[in-house]
Length: 203
Length: 250
Ligand code: HEM
Ligand code: SF4
Ligand code: SF4
Ligand code: FES
Image: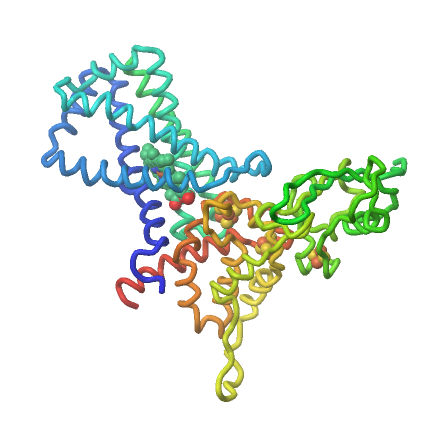
Protein backbone atom coordinates (compact mmCIF):
# COMPACT_ATOMS: atom_id res chain seq x y z
CA UNK A 1 0.00 0.00 0.00
CA UNK A 2 2.32 2.70 -1.20
CA UNK A 3 5.08 1.54 1.06
CA UNK A 4 8.48 0.30 0.07
CA UNK A 5 10.11 1.10 -3.23
CA UNK A 6 7.22 2.51 -5.23
CA UNK A 7 7.36 4.31 -8.55
CA UNK A 8 6.92 7.44 -6.45
CA UNK A 9 10.21 6.65 -4.70
CA UNK A 10 12.23 5.97 -7.85
CA UNK A 11 10.88 8.95 -9.74
CA UNK A 12 11.51 11.32 -6.86
CA UNK A 13 15.00 9.91 -6.48
CA UNK A 14 15.53 10.48 -10.22
CA UNK A 15 14.33 14.03 -9.81
CA UNK A 16 16.59 14.65 -6.83
CA UNK A 17 19.59 13.01 -8.47
CA UNK A 18 19.28 15.50 -11.35
CA UNK A 19 19.85 18.34 -8.88
CA UNK A 20 21.90 16.69 -6.15
CA UNK A 21 24.51 15.62 -7.00
CA UNK A 22 24.45 15.77 -10.83
CA UNK A 23 23.24 19.37 -11.21
CA UNK A 24 25.49 20.64 -8.46
CA UNK A 25 28.41 18.86 -10.08
CA UNK A 26 27.57 20.36 -13.49
CA UNK A 27 27.50 23.86 -11.98
CA UNK A 28 30.76 23.28 -10.14
CA UNK A 29 32.35 21.87 -13.30
CA UNK A 30 31.37 24.91 -15.38
CA UNK A 31 32.67 27.30 -12.71
CA UNK A 32 35.97 25.43 -12.58
CA UNK A 33 36.27 25.60 -16.37
CA UNK A 34 35.75 29.34 -16.16
CA UNK A 35 39.17 29.64 -14.54
CA UNK A 36 40.54 28.98 -18.04
CA UNK A 37 39.57 32.56 -18.91
CA UNK A 38 42.26 33.68 -16.44
CA UNK A 39 44.89 31.75 -18.33
CA UNK A 40 46.41 28.32 -18.69
CA UNK A 41 48.19 28.34 -15.31
CA UNK A 42 45.04 29.20 -13.34
CA UNK A 43 43.09 26.44 -15.02
CA UNK A 44 45.82 23.88 -14.46
CA UNK A 45 46.06 24.86 -10.80
CA UNK A 46 42.29 24.49 -10.33
CA UNK A 47 42.13 21.18 -12.16
CA UNK A 48 45.14 19.71 -10.37
CA UNK A 49 43.43 20.52 -7.07
CA UNK A 50 40.49 18.42 -8.27
CA UNK A 51 42.78 15.70 -9.59
CA UNK A 52 44.50 15.36 -6.24
CA UNK A 53 41.51 15.09 -3.95
CA UNK A 54 41.84 12.21 -1.52
CA UNK A 55 39.76 9.12 -2.33
CA UNK A 56 39.17 10.62 -5.75
CA UNK A 57 37.95 7.36 -7.24
CA UNK A 58 35.35 6.94 -4.47
CA UNK A 59 34.16 10.53 -4.92
CA UNK A 60 33.97 10.12 -8.67
CA UNK A 61 32.03 6.93 -8.35
CA UNK A 62 29.48 7.99 -5.72
CA UNK A 63 29.13 11.71 -6.41
CA UNK A 64 29.29 11.58 -10.18
CA UNK A 65 29.23 8.28 -11.96
CA UNK A 66 26.55 6.24 -10.18
CA UNK A 67 24.01 9.08 -9.74
CA UNK A 68 24.57 10.24 -13.33
CA UNK A 69 24.24 6.74 -14.77
CA UNK A 70 21.07 6.16 -12.75
CA UNK A 71 19.60 9.50 -13.80
CA UNK A 72 20.61 9.08 -17.43
CA UNK A 73 19.34 5.53 -17.98
CA UNK A 74 16.12 6.11 -16.08
CA UNK A 75 15.79 9.42 -17.94
CA UNK A 76 16.08 7.72 -21.33
CA UNK A 77 13.43 5.22 -20.24
CA UNK A 78 11.11 8.06 -19.14
CA UNK A 79 11.73 10.09 -22.26
CA UNK A 80 10.90 7.13 -24.47
CA UNK A 81 7.59 6.70 -22.66
CA UNK A 82 6.40 10.22 -23.53
CA UNK A 83 4.60 10.98 -26.74
CA UNK A 84 5.50 14.54 -27.61
CA UNK A 85 2.70 16.62 -29.08
CA UNK A 86 4.18 20.07 -29.63
CA UNK A 87 2.81 20.02 -33.17
CA UNK A 88 -0.72 20.07 -31.70
CA UNK A 89 -0.28 21.99 -28.44
CA UNK A 90 1.99 25.02 -28.74
CA UNK A 91 2.08 26.04 -25.08
CA UNK A 92 5.35 27.30 -23.63
CA UNK A 93 5.48 24.55 -20.98
CA UNK A 94 4.84 21.88 -23.59
CA UNK A 95 7.85 23.11 -25.58
CA UNK A 96 9.90 23.05 -22.37
CA UNK A 97 8.74 19.47 -21.79
CA UNK A 98 9.85 18.56 -25.33
CA UNK A 99 13.22 20.31 -24.96
CA UNK A 100 13.75 18.67 -21.55
CA UNK A 101 13.67 15.31 -23.30
CA UNK A 102 15.60 16.42 -26.39
CA UNK A 103 18.40 17.99 -24.35
CA UNK A 104 18.42 14.89 -22.14
CA UNK A 105 19.26 12.76 -25.18
CA UNK A 106 21.86 15.28 -26.39
CA UNK A 107 23.44 15.34 -22.91
CA UNK A 108 23.41 11.54 -22.86
CA UNK A 109 25.56 11.22 -25.98
CA UNK A 110 27.62 14.29 -25.21
CA UNK A 111 28.57 13.08 -21.73
CA UNK A 112 29.64 9.65 -23.06
CA UNK A 113 31.79 11.29 -25.76
CA UNK A 114 33.20 13.89 -23.37
CA UNK A 115 34.11 11.30 -20.71
CA UNK A 116 35.67 9.11 -23.38
CA UNK A 117 37.83 11.96 -24.69
CA UNK A 118 38.95 13.23 -21.30
CA UNK A 119 38.62 11.01 -18.23
CA UNK A 120 39.10 7.71 -20.10
CA UNK A 121 42.12 9.03 -22.02
CA UNK A 122 43.68 10.13 -18.72
CA UNK A 123 43.30 6.55 -17.48
CA UNK A 124 45.11 5.44 -20.65
CA UNK A 125 47.99 7.74 -19.77
CA UNK A 126 47.20 11.07 -21.42
CA UNK A 127 47.96 14.13 -19.41
CA UNK A 128 44.92 16.05 -18.13
CA UNK A 129 44.94 19.84 -18.22
CA UNK A 130 44.57 22.89 -20.40
CA UNK A 131 46.42 21.49 -23.41
CA UNK A 132 44.18 18.44 -23.58
CA UNK A 133 41.05 20.59 -23.92
CA UNK A 134 42.87 22.96 -26.25
CA UNK A 135 43.66 20.07 -28.59
CA UNK A 136 40.02 18.94 -28.57
CA UNK A 137 38.36 22.29 -29.25
CA UNK A 138 40.86 23.54 -31.78
CA UNK A 139 38.93 21.29 -34.15
CA UNK A 140 35.95 23.49 -35.12
CA UNK A 141 33.54 20.55 -35.36
CA UNK A 142 34.43 19.46 -31.83
CA UNK A 143 34.00 23.05 -30.66
CA UNK A 144 30.51 23.23 -32.15
CA UNK A 145 29.60 19.88 -30.58
CA UNK A 146 30.89 21.15 -27.24
CA UNK A 147 28.82 24.32 -27.50
CA UNK A 148 25.68 22.28 -28.28
CA UNK A 149 26.47 19.84 -25.49
CA UNK A 150 27.09 22.54 -22.87
CA UNK A 151 24.01 24.62 -23.71
CA UNK A 152 21.86 21.47 -23.79
CA UNK A 153 23.14 20.27 -20.43
CA UNK A 154 22.57 23.72 -18.93
CA UNK A 155 19.06 23.95 -20.36
CA UNK A 156 18.27 20.46 -19.10
CA UNK A 157 19.53 21.28 -15.63
CA UNK A 158 17.89 24.69 -15.24
CA UNK A 159 14.54 23.62 -16.67
CA UNK A 160 14.86 20.46 -14.60
CA UNK A 161 15.30 22.59 -11.51
CA UNK A 162 11.91 24.11 -12.19
CA UNK A 163 10.23 20.70 -12.61
CA UNK A 164 12.15 19.31 -9.63
CA UNK A 165 10.48 21.92 -7.42
CA UNK A 166 7.09 20.68 -8.60
CA UNK A 167 7.97 16.98 -8.49
CA UNK A 168 8.91 17.37 -4.83
CA UNK A 169 5.88 19.51 -4.10
CA UNK A 170 7.83 22.64 -3.18
CA UNK A 171 6.31 25.08 -5.68
CA UNK A 172 2.56 24.41 -5.50
CA UNK A 173 0.85 27.73 -6.22
CA UNK A 174 0.79 29.03 -9.82
CA UNK A 175 2.44 32.23 -8.56
CA UNK A 176 5.42 30.37 -7.06
CA UNK A 177 5.78 28.31 -10.24
CA UNK A 178 5.82 31.51 -12.27
CA UNK A 179 8.42 33.14 -10.04
CA UNK A 180 10.67 30.11 -10.32
CA UNK A 181 10.14 30.06 -14.07
CA UNK A 182 11.90 33.43 -14.20
CA UNK A 183 14.62 32.24 -11.83
CA UNK A 184 15.15 29.17 -13.99
CA UNK A 185 15.45 31.28 -17.15
CA UNK A 186 17.93 33.54 -15.32
CA UNK A 187 19.98 30.53 -14.25
CA UNK A 188 19.96 29.25 -17.82
CA UNK A 189 21.36 32.50 -19.17
CA UNK A 190 23.97 32.78 -16.42
CA UNK A 191 25.25 29.21 -16.60
CA UNK A 192 25.23 29.25 -20.43
CA UNK A 193 27.35 32.40 -20.34
CA UNK A 194 29.84 30.82 -17.94
CA UNK A 195 29.98 27.58 -19.91
CA UNK A 196 30.38 29.24 -23.31
CA UNK A 197 33.01 31.75 -22.18
CA UNK A 198 34.97 28.94 -20.57
CA UNK A 199 34.99 26.72 -23.65
CA UNK A 200 36.15 29.62 -25.86
CA UNK A 201 39.00 30.22 -23.44
CA UNK A 202 40.46 26.86 -24.48
CA UNK A 203 40.44 27.62 -28.22
CA UNK B 1 -20.66 39.80 -42.38
CA UNK B 2 -22.32 37.96 -45.22
CA UNK B 3 -24.22 34.91 -44.09
CA UNK B 4 -22.57 31.63 -45.01
CA UNK B 5 -24.84 29.52 -47.18
CA UNK B 6 -23.44 26.19 -46.13
CA UNK B 7 -21.14 24.50 -43.65
CA UNK B 8 -18.34 22.14 -44.66
CA UNK B 9 -17.47 19.35 -42.25
CA UNK B 10 -14.64 16.82 -42.54
CA UNK B 11 -15.36 13.95 -40.22
CA UNK B 12 -13.06 11.10 -39.28
CA UNK B 13 -15.24 8.00 -39.23
CA UNK B 14 -14.76 4.44 -38.12
CA UNK B 15 -17.29 1.59 -38.11
CA UNK B 16 -15.84 -0.03 -35.01
CA UNK B 17 -12.61 -0.33 -33.02
CA UNK B 18 -11.08 -2.86 -35.41
CA UNK B 19 -11.99 -1.17 -38.68
CA UNK B 20 -9.74 1.36 -40.38
CA UNK B 21 -10.74 4.99 -40.06
CA UNK B 22 -11.59 7.14 -43.06
CA UNK B 23 -12.58 10.73 -43.69
CA UNK B 24 -15.94 11.78 -45.06
CA UNK B 25 -16.96 15.27 -46.12
CA UNK B 26 -20.40 16.76 -45.57
CA UNK B 27 -21.95 20.01 -46.70
CA UNK B 28 -24.99 21.09 -44.75
CA UNK B 29 -27.19 24.20 -44.98
CA UNK B 30 -26.18 27.09 -42.77
CA UNK B 31 -28.34 28.41 -39.95
CA UNK B 32 -27.21 31.02 -37.45
CA UNK B 33 -26.20 29.96 -33.91
CA UNK B 34 -25.59 26.30 -34.67
CA UNK B 35 -23.31 24.17 -32.54
CA UNK B 36 -21.48 20.99 -33.54
CA UNK B 37 -24.30 18.80 -32.21
CA UNK B 38 -26.94 20.56 -34.31
CA UNK B 39 -24.69 20.18 -37.35
CA UNK B 40 -24.40 16.45 -36.64
CA UNK B 41 -28.18 16.26 -36.25
CA UNK B 42 -28.51 17.89 -39.64
CA UNK B 43 -26.36 15.10 -41.11
CA UNK B 44 -28.49 12.52 -39.34
CA UNK B 45 -31.63 13.99 -40.91
CA UNK B 46 -30.18 13.54 -44.38
CA UNK B 47 -27.08 11.31 -44.41
CA UNK B 48 -25.69 12.26 -47.79
CA UNK B 49 -22.00 13.14 -48.14
CA UNK B 50 -20.45 15.98 -50.13
CA UNK B 51 -20.18 13.78 -53.22
CA UNK B 52 -23.95 13.31 -53.11
CA UNK B 53 -23.68 9.64 -52.08
CA UNK B 54 -26.05 8.18 -49.54
CA UNK B 55 -24.16 7.17 -46.41
CA UNK B 56 -24.78 6.24 -42.78
CA UNK B 57 -25.50 8.89 -40.15
CA UNK B 58 -22.47 9.95 -38.11
CA UNK B 59 -22.56 8.50 -34.60
CA UNK B 60 -21.73 10.70 -31.61
CA UNK B 61 -22.58 10.82 -27.94
CA UNK B 62 -24.20 13.65 -26.02
CA UNK B 63 -26.34 13.97 -22.93
CA UNK B 64 -26.56 17.29 -21.13
CA UNK B 65 -26.03 19.70 -24.04
CA UNK B 66 -24.70 22.30 -21.60
CA UNK B 67 -21.08 21.27 -21.01
CA UNK B 68 -21.53 19.44 -17.74
CA UNK B 69 -21.54 15.74 -18.64
CA UNK B 70 -18.46 15.58 -20.85
CA UNK B 71 -19.85 12.87 -23.12
CA UNK B 72 -19.74 14.87 -26.36
CA UNK B 73 -15.98 15.51 -26.19
CA UNK B 74 -14.16 15.22 -29.50
CA UNK B 75 -11.36 16.89 -31.41
CA UNK B 76 -12.69 19.94 -33.19
CA UNK B 77 -10.27 21.66 -35.55
CA UNK B 78 -7.39 20.02 -33.72
CA UNK B 79 -8.48 20.87 -30.18
CA UNK B 80 -10.17 18.56 -27.70
CA UNK B 81 -13.43 20.17 -26.58
CA UNK B 82 -17.16 19.67 -26.19
CA UNK B 83 -19.33 19.50 -29.30
CA UNK B 84 -22.32 20.99 -27.49
CA UNK B 85 -20.60 24.20 -26.40
CA UNK B 86 -18.65 24.73 -29.63
CA UNK B 87 -20.43 27.20 -31.89
CA UNK B 88 -20.13 26.86 -35.66
CA UNK B 89 -20.05 30.65 -36.12
CA UNK B 90 -16.81 30.82 -34.14
CA UNK B 91 -14.99 28.14 -36.14
CA UNK B 92 -12.89 28.24 -39.24
CA UNK B 93 -14.16 26.10 -42.11
CA UNK B 94 -13.89 23.34 -43.13
CA UNK B 95 -14.58 22.05 -39.65
CA UNK B 96 -12.63 18.92 -38.82
CA UNK B 97 -14.13 16.48 -36.35
CA UNK B 98 -12.13 13.56 -35.00
CA UNK B 99 -12.74 11.20 -32.10
CA UNK B 100 -10.50 11.59 -29.03
CA UNK B 101 -7.39 9.49 -29.61
CA UNK B 102 -6.81 8.52 -25.99
CA UNK B 103 -9.81 6.22 -25.84
CA UNK B 104 -10.96 3.25 -27.91
CA UNK B 105 -13.44 4.24 -30.60
CA UNK B 106 -16.89 2.68 -30.39
CA UNK B 107 -18.09 4.20 -33.62
CA UNK B 108 -17.28 7.42 -35.51
CA UNK B 109 -17.02 10.16 -32.88
CA UNK B 110 -18.18 8.03 -29.96
CA UNK B 111 -15.43 6.73 -27.69
CA UNK B 112 -15.26 4.52 -24.61
CA UNK B 113 -13.98 6.54 -21.64
CA UNK B 114 -14.12 3.55 -19.31
CA UNK B 115 -10.44 3.89 -18.35
CA UNK B 116 -11.22 7.17 -16.61
CA UNK B 117 -13.91 5.56 -14.48
CA UNK B 118 -11.57 2.67 -13.72
CA UNK B 119 -8.98 5.21 -12.59
CA UNK B 120 -11.52 6.88 -10.29
CA UNK B 121 -12.19 3.48 -8.72
CA UNK B 122 -8.48 2.82 -8.39
CA UNK B 123 -7.87 6.07 -6.51
CA UNK B 124 -11.07 5.65 -4.43
CA UNK B 125 -12.61 8.89 -5.59
CA UNK B 126 -15.54 8.73 -3.20
CA UNK B 127 -16.27 9.22 0.49
CA UNK B 128 -17.12 6.06 2.42
CA UNK B 129 -19.96 6.93 4.79
CA UNK B 130 -21.76 3.62 5.15
CA UNK B 131 -21.79 2.04 8.61
CA UNK B 132 -23.90 -0.53 10.44
CA UNK B 133 -25.45 2.34 12.37
CA UNK B 134 -26.04 6.04 11.79
CA UNK B 135 -22.67 7.71 12.00
CA UNK B 136 -24.21 11.15 12.36
CA UNK B 137 -23.02 14.34 10.75
CA UNK B 138 -19.39 14.61 9.68
CA UNK B 139 -16.99 17.46 10.47
CA UNK B 140 -17.61 20.77 8.72
CA UNK B 141 -15.55 22.07 5.84
CA UNK B 142 -14.09 25.55 6.19
CA UNK B 143 -15.75 27.95 3.74
CA UNK B 144 -12.42 29.06 2.30
CA UNK B 145 -11.54 25.47 1.42
CA UNK B 146 -14.99 24.77 0.08
CA UNK B 147 -14.61 27.54 -2.45
CA UNK B 148 -11.59 26.05 -4.22
CA UNK B 149 -12.70 22.46 -3.63
CA UNK B 150 -15.88 23.30 -5.51
CA UNK B 151 -13.79 24.19 -8.54
CA UNK B 152 -12.20 20.72 -8.45
CA UNK B 153 -15.63 19.11 -8.18
CA UNK B 154 -16.59 20.56 -11.58
CA UNK B 155 -14.63 17.83 -13.36
CA UNK B 156 -16.95 16.05 -15.82
CA UNK B 157 -14.55 13.22 -16.73
CA UNK B 158 -14.56 14.50 -20.30
CA UNK B 159 -11.02 13.33 -21.03
CA UNK B 160 -9.71 16.49 -22.73
CA UNK B 161 -6.84 16.72 -20.24
CA UNK B 162 -5.81 13.11 -20.89
CA UNK B 163 -6.00 13.76 -24.61
CA UNK B 164 -3.54 16.68 -24.34
CA UNK B 165 -1.18 14.98 -21.89
CA UNK B 166 2.03 13.73 -23.55
CA UNK B 167 2.47 11.11 -20.85
CA UNK B 168 -0.95 9.51 -21.31
CA UNK B 169 -0.37 7.12 -24.19
CA UNK B 170 -0.21 3.47 -25.16
CA UNK B 171 3.33 3.07 -23.79
CA UNK B 172 2.47 4.36 -20.32
CA UNK B 173 0.04 3.29 -17.63
CA UNK B 174 -0.41 6.87 -16.38
CA UNK B 175 -3.97 7.38 -15.09
CA UNK B 176 -3.85 11.04 -16.17
CA UNK B 177 -4.45 14.40 -14.49
CA UNK B 178 -8.24 14.27 -13.91
CA UNK B 179 -8.31 11.39 -11.38
CA UNK B 180 -5.31 12.93 -9.58
CA UNK B 181 -7.19 16.14 -9.05
CA UNK B 182 -10.09 14.10 -7.69
CA UNK B 183 -7.76 12.63 -5.08
CA UNK B 184 -7.01 16.15 -3.92
CA UNK B 185 -10.74 16.91 -3.83
CA UNK B 186 -11.66 13.88 -1.72
CA UNK B 187 -8.62 14.23 0.53
CA UNK B 188 -9.66 17.81 1.22
CA UNK B 189 -13.18 16.88 2.27
CA UNK B 190 -13.15 16.54 6.10
CA UNK B 191 -14.82 13.11 6.02
CA UNK B 192 -12.93 12.02 2.92
CA UNK B 193 -9.67 12.93 4.66
CA UNK B 194 -10.23 9.96 7.00
CA UNK B 195 -9.20 7.70 4.09
CA UNK B 196 -6.45 9.98 2.83
CA UNK B 197 -3.65 7.42 3.09
CA UNK B 198 -5.46 4.90 0.90
CA UNK B 199 -5.84 7.39 -1.92
CA UNK B 200 -2.24 8.56 -1.61
CA UNK B 201 -1.05 4.95 -1.64
CA UNK B 202 -3.03 4.36 -4.84
CA UNK B 203 -1.35 7.26 -6.65
CA UNK B 204 2.15 6.47 -5.39
CA UNK B 205 2.30 3.26 -7.38
CA UNK B 206 2.90 2.58 -11.08
CA UNK B 207 1.01 4.91 -13.39
CA UNK B 208 0.32 7.28 -10.52
CA UNK B 209 1.32 10.84 -9.83
CA UNK B 210 5.00 10.58 -10.70
CA UNK B 211 4.17 9.58 -14.26
CA UNK B 212 3.38 13.28 -14.79
CA UNK B 213 6.20 15.15 -16.54
CA UNK B 214 5.00 18.71 -15.91
CA UNK B 215 4.17 19.71 -19.47
CA UNK B 216 1.11 21.48 -18.06
CA UNK B 217 -0.96 20.93 -21.19
CA UNK B 218 -3.81 19.59 -19.07
CA UNK B 219 -4.50 22.84 -17.27
CA UNK B 220 -4.44 24.72 -20.59
CA UNK B 221 -7.11 22.57 -22.22
CA UNK B 222 -9.48 21.79 -19.34
CA UNK B 223 -12.86 23.30 -20.38
CA UNK B 224 -13.82 23.67 -16.72
CA UNK B 225 -10.73 25.68 -15.84
CA UNK B 226 -9.76 23.19 -13.14
CA UNK B 227 -6.34 24.04 -11.63
CA UNK B 228 -4.98 20.58 -12.48
CA UNK B 229 -1.30 21.47 -12.19
CA UNK B 230 -1.87 23.03 -8.77
CA UNK B 231 -3.60 19.81 -7.71
CA UNK B 232 -0.70 17.76 -9.06
CA UNK B 233 1.91 19.89 -7.28
CA UNK B 234 -0.10 19.79 -4.03
CA UNK B 235 -0.32 15.99 -4.29
CA UNK B 236 3.40 15.82 -5.01
CA UNK B 237 3.88 17.48 -1.66
CA UNK B 238 1.40 15.11 0.02
CA UNK B 239 3.06 12.01 -1.44
CA UNK B 240 6.51 13.29 -0.48
CA UNK B 241 5.37 13.75 3.13
CA UNK B 242 3.50 10.45 3.09
CA UNK B 243 6.58 8.56 1.94
CA UNK B 244 8.54 10.10 4.85
CA UNK B 245 5.77 9.06 7.24
CA UNK B 246 5.75 5.55 5.77
CA UNK B 247 9.49 5.12 6.22
CA UNK B 248 10.35 7.09 9.33
CA UNK B 249 7.01 6.62 11.05
CA UNK B 250 4.49 9.31 11.73
C1 HEM C 1 23.97 16.62 -17.60
C2 HEM C 1 23.56 16.01 -16.55
C3 HEM C 1 22.10 16.05 -16.15
C4 HEM C 1 21.53 16.89 -15.24
C5 HEM C 1 22.24 17.98 -14.46
C6 HEM C 1 20.12 16.56 -15.17
C7 HEM C 1 19.22 17.20 -14.35
C8 HEM C 1 17.86 16.96 -14.32
C9 HEM C 1 16.92 17.56 -13.42
C10 HEM C 1 17.24 18.57 -12.35
C11 HEM C 1 15.68 17.08 -13.72
C12 HEM C 1 14.37 17.45 -13.08
C13 HEM C 1 13.71 16.34 -12.34
C14 HEM C 1 12.20 16.43 -12.33
O1 HEM C 1 11.57 16.93 -13.25
O2 HEM C 1 11.60 15.99 -11.36
C15 HEM C 1 15.84 16.18 -14.81
C16 HEM C 1 14.80 15.50 -15.41
C17 HEM C 1 14.95 14.65 -16.46
N1 HEM C 1 16.14 14.18 -16.98
FE1 HEM C 1 17.98 14.83 -16.49
N2 HEM C 1 19.85 15.55 -16.04
C18 HEM C 1 21.03 15.19 -16.66
C19 HEM C 1 21.19 14.20 -17.59
C20 HEM C 1 20.16 13.51 -18.20
C21 HEM C 1 20.33 12.55 -19.23
C22 HEM C 1 21.66 12.11 -19.82
C23 HEM C 1 19.08 12.11 -19.57
C24 HEM C 1 18.76 11.09 -20.63
C25 HEM C 1 17.90 11.25 -21.58
C26 HEM C 1 18.11 12.80 -18.74
C27 HEM C 1 16.73 12.66 -18.81
C28 HEM C 1 15.82 13.33 -18.03
C29 HEM C 1 14.38 13.27 -18.18
C30 HEM C 1 13.60 12.48 -19.22
C31 HEM C 1 13.83 14.10 -17.20
C32 HEM C 1 12.36 14.42 -16.98
C33 HEM C 1 11.67 13.51 -16.06
C34 HEM C 1 10.23 13.92 -15.89
O3 HEM C 1 9.97 15.07 -15.58
O4 HEM C 1 9.35 13.07 -16.10
N3 HEM C 1 18.80 13.65 -17.91
N4 HEM C 1 17.17 16.09 -15.16
S1 SF4 D 1 -10.12 17.81 -15.40
FE1 SF4 D 1 -11.10 19.10 -16.94
S2 SF4 D 1 -10.37 18.28 -18.90
FE2 SF4 D 1 -9.94 16.75 -17.36
S3 SF4 D 1 -11.67 15.37 -17.40
FE3 SF4 D 1 -12.11 16.89 -15.81
S4 SF4 D 1 -13.24 18.50 -16.85
FE4 SF4 D 1 -12.32 17.25 -18.43
S1 SF4 E 1 1.26 18.42 -16.35
FE1 SF4 E 1 1.43 16.21 -16.10
S2 SF4 E 1 -0.66 15.48 -16.18
FE2 SF4 E 1 -0.71 17.57 -17.00
S3 SF4 E 1 -0.50 17.26 -19.22
FE3 SF4 E 1 1.56 17.54 -18.40
S4 SF4 E 1 2.35 15.48 -18.01
FE4 SF4 E 1 0.12 15.34 -18.25
S1 FES F 1 -23.45 16.93 -24.06
FE1 FES F 1 -22.80 17.04 -21.99
S2 FES F 1 -20.95 18.15 -22.23
FE2 FES F 1 -21.74 18.19 -24.23
